[in-house]
Length: 112
Length: 112
Image (cartoon, rainbow over the protein chains, first blue to last red):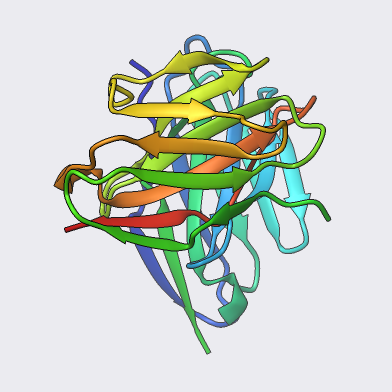
């Protein structure tokens, strides 16, 4: 059974702080790791799809790294802004191109 | 930018009633999914659909659930006789030739 876990469950930071959180997944039979950003009442927004060990991807102030050998990915936000407040979800496909198995999400709150 | 849309945004129904949740995937996408998130739990996979048939379904997706793509654009999820435990946020997602699944904003189903 593929189990994806995220930590912490929630995070409260001040505007301007940099922050990071973790997604862990089984390192065997790895296909890909997806990161989504989900604001209440909006569609979860795809941030990154990562497939290769050592991958680093960046989108503005948000970046992510991937370690498939040890089964984890980090998401970093540099200089958090209130508009970064959202739930960040990671997910891994159960098989290539198939259903996503999600972590429980990290709820980020950035205070001005 | 193309997006996945879902209607209604919120549906309230009585236990035992039938509900149909509607989704308009991104045009030219090939793979379609339904997921749901019960409050406080992980987002969980329900069913995937490809080439006009179900390609995979979870244990949750029993005989009370069905999916259809009636007219080549809409993608619907029907629950024949709703139960209290069906209360959740239901997400539709579509996927084209890349690994990314694009999600709609969800339908919040409340069963009374």
